[in-house]
Image (cartoon, one colour):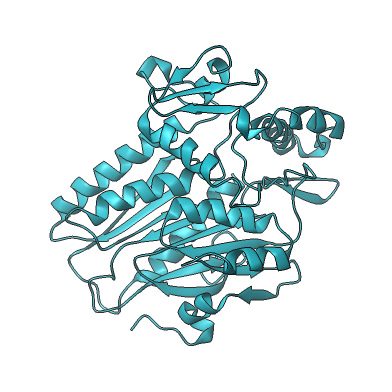
Length: 357
């Protein structure tokens, strides 16, 4: 429920921030509630409602399909879909043929593993599944919430070598060299799906759009109402669920993504201490250096991966990492309420003088 509420707040913020001074006939919006366990919002400028609805239906269909492809916890074999769940069940026995979209996601993640300082590991599912189990139990029964035993986490961590994920490009198959390896693509899946869908929209009759998928925002060309940019709110981690003013910054952007990883979307509490879903691959525990890290760059899949990696590094390393990358900027929110930005982020931040005109 906490994750859904956070997504709903961001969706409401986007609607509020994107409203022009006067309503225009060619602006439309819709929401989807059945993909990636979050509220997904689409706002677009189209020549007609019919055009918008046609594009929105395609967006919805693509989100639904990729939700199933990337799902760790459910099988869709009765629909002819090989999901992450199916790979975790079968890929240690024999190479499993997968959809090109899923294969490209896994290839993308493995290729960028070293770039991200080995912080984003889709082969870490054995550890993440333990945290998921304890988090779900803690949310269902808060009075008896417990932490996973460290010995169980350490045992599972012996089975997260990404080199044991064998990808055969010629045959489009996936194989696990370690029988106990498990995949979890949650650190990248929403952003990757959002980017593929955005490329479809950019090539079609509605290139002026903004998609919000939880903490993943992707904008197309400028809104077609005279403004030069879309306004995107960076959420206050301690803000109330329905407070439209509960954001710490507004970014004015177009043709780019803003993706946030934070400790306030998926978490549970044990003895009054919050334990979120972003797990450090070295300590096997949630990292506590930041409340959130927001990445600003064109590709949403890349941004999703980078936001996780940057969140899991100490600040100095995190900042050096982001500043070493071309076309990437970031905003860091700290537990004491302070904020840091790269120079590029300051150029689009309302607090630094940016506007949407």
